[in-house]
Image 1 (cartoon, rainbow, N blue to C red):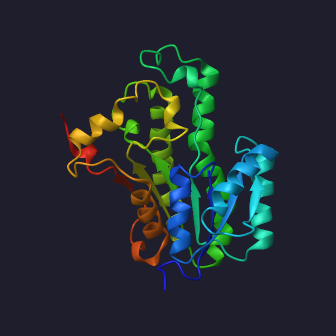
Image 2 (cartoon, rainbow, N blue to C red):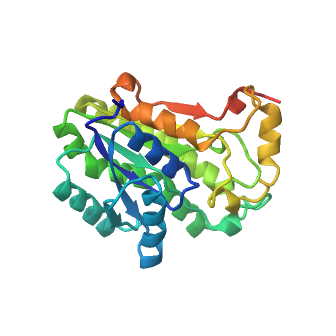
Length: 261
């Protein structure tokens, strides 16, 4: 038996088998959950997400396209989910975006307005947008768990993280306000601040070449975080074992965040 037996939910953000979203999907699937997925629009993106999901042993996965910057796409994706599933016990928000040119050391001050607003929109606002579209279905089943992926750059300056740090700070604050409003419906909202992991997304941030080695020296556990670490935490947050936890940012970084120097 798994701690997510009988639970069903949606994961937004699986692009390949190296992302945190994939490791979250793996943990939830192993714990017995039924998991649905979105993918970026386009046949190439669908094939890439499908290949990643099928590696989990999920045959014929539920997949729908989603451009999170489009309200019409959000409406369509969540309507499709509600047509095909009678409950939503968890929702995983694992998407973010910032212009790669803005993610270089020394380039924050010159961030263009459009790039700034775009990062906030995709990386933070979409959590509120997805929560709004899922709350009725969650509430009808007695509640649920919403979680989003953050990073320590939301709290402290990480060279090159720049506008993404601002966006992640907005994401964490958004989660707290959602937790306050949705709690009366039995819906919990948390963020997971995962440690540095070499992924397609992290490769866009300048100055991260030595991050893994640096964290290895500083981490109290004397190792770098692994995808399975975050996956296990997400599965716990989706389970009834965490029913008293909401509005929190949970650090899963082998302790790097507690070290000052």
